[in-house]
Image 1 (cartoon, rainbow, N blue to C red):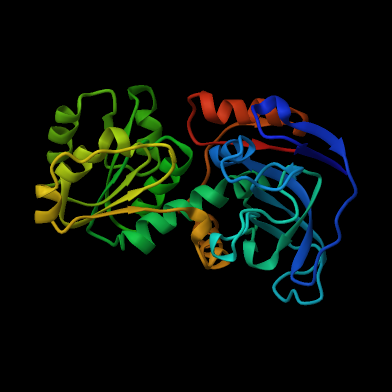
Image 2: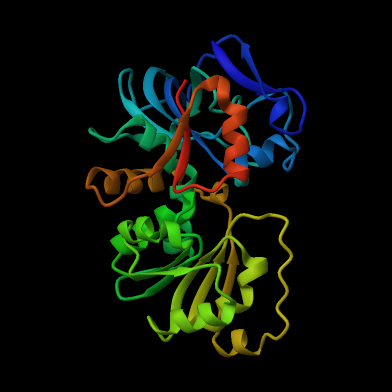
Length: 327
């Protein structure tokens, strides 16, 4: 089968399209014929060596396709089932990778990393929802306990996680405020944002614009905490939660904790891969996909041999939604 692997850490040029043997599934795994692969910043960070994996490694995390075969202990899926999911191992197991990644014509995936792909939902959308959907769900529900009537601020509402978080917050009945560029404001509103604010404005102006919508944000989802930590504190209401994702190398500084202390504020960094029930979250996302309460905006698709270009784009280019590879 064709697969995209790297034998050393580095920039996208280390990715190689190779012919390698197809793996057989372990008892708790399925063999999946891949139809689409999501592209995520974590794939690029991993390729650069952030987590020090054993090499060589097939790149990629999110996948959708059709089950070819199932291991002896698999009970949820059978040959012919359409599924979507995410491959990386949970942090709690002590590792960050299964026997292979997602950028291949066939992959083996543990049963507890998959969910049924609803009828009428494309593999492209299924492959795009995995990590960003788990991240958004964990941030808003598990840590933020977001519910109807709350106010939610999503930084970067047009990004991969951001555009899914806006839809989830809207589906939960929250008032959704999002930051985005002016050129993407209409798209972010179409995802369900009640107010979209240009993120190029100074923090003082952002705070004033947010205050016109709510007198206190209940949940903030922030992927640029180094830049916005003080803003997040200032706009949060009493008992609010600021959930921090991405940008592993940020070094935020809070010069005065007085306001955060007075609000009993929680600042919660999180990692999607620490989620102990990935299959459960994926099934919830699948239900929203089936009911048209959630989708993935696919900005561009790539061939398998264009994986390096896709990983460059996900780290360097500006676009709405997700990038997806179709082998």
